[in-house]
Length: 175
Image (cartoon, rainbow, N blue to C red):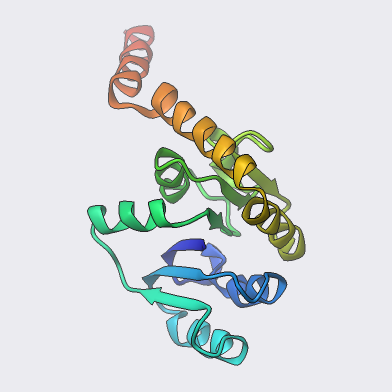
């Protein structure tokens, strides 16, 4: 199962999802969580490819529901095309122990280490993104190892006490 979560806008990469789906095995389930201005276009494009069994749509989900979807997924795709400042969805996926395949844009490198907790893909290279997704779907051991690395990194770098400690250090250096 592949998961996308985000706003349905072109700069978030939602319009590449139909192309990505064409590269994946027919047995692949895709869960699409979110809403936004590109919703109708996305549904139309996917309906040309999917005949009702491959894709499941969800609107916006609350925190508990989202955690459940992360845990159900095998891999999370993060196809943002703009200079993403951070990318909360990626951190949430890693915290849930899921590897992420993302375009190498903006601040994504701050949390995604290529080949360690997922894969960084050159912006817009849908076929390479699909190749890495297929690899993770086929190699459960690799996907689990990357997921565990992601969880470990999130605990080390993004837990509240660590972030507060870093923030305090910055404030102390200013004072």
